[in-house]
Length: 207
Image 1: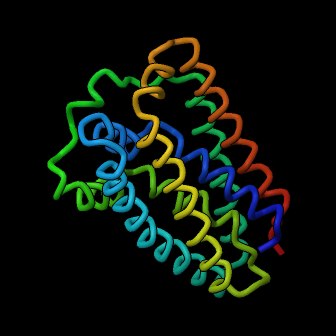
Image 2: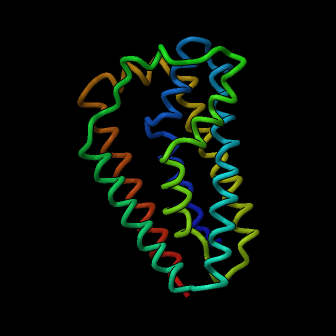
C-alpha cells in the first residue's frame, strides 16, 4: 500500500470514528454514566466487530480480483459515489442530537457485547467496508499484506476516535449542543470524507 493511499485511509476511517453515529452515541452514553474506562468497553466491542467486516471485505475483494478487474474498478467508482452522498448529506443534514445520549447505556457487564452487536447490525459498517474499502486495495499487489495494514490502521483510528469521545464526553456534548458549532463540525466531517475518498481513487487507480 502506497503511503498516500494509507494517509487517505486514515483520514476516511478516522473521520468516520469521529462522526456521531450509533457507536459514538453508545460510547458517549457510557462515558456520561460510568466514566472513561467503562466507556472503552463498547469501543473495544465496535473495533472487534470491525475485524469481521474487514475479513468479509478482503475476501470479497480477493474474489473480484481473480474474476473481473473491471468489476473491481466499477466497485471503486460506486464507492466514491457513496462517499459523495455521505459527505454531502453530512454537510447539509441535521446536526447531532445528544439530548438522550445519557439514557441508553446498558449495565457495565454488557457494554462490550453491546458494542459488538451494534456494529454488526448497523448499516454504516456495510457501507464503509463493502462499498468504500475496495477503493483502497491495489489490485496489482497481494491482498494479505494490505489486509494487515488496514486491520491495524482501522482498529487504531476507530479506537482513537471513540477514546476522544469517552474521555471528553461532557465537553464534546457542550460543543455539539451549539447549533453553529455542530454545523461547522458536520461540514468538516463531510469535506474530509469526500477528500479522502477522492484521494484514494486518484492515488490508487485500477490497473
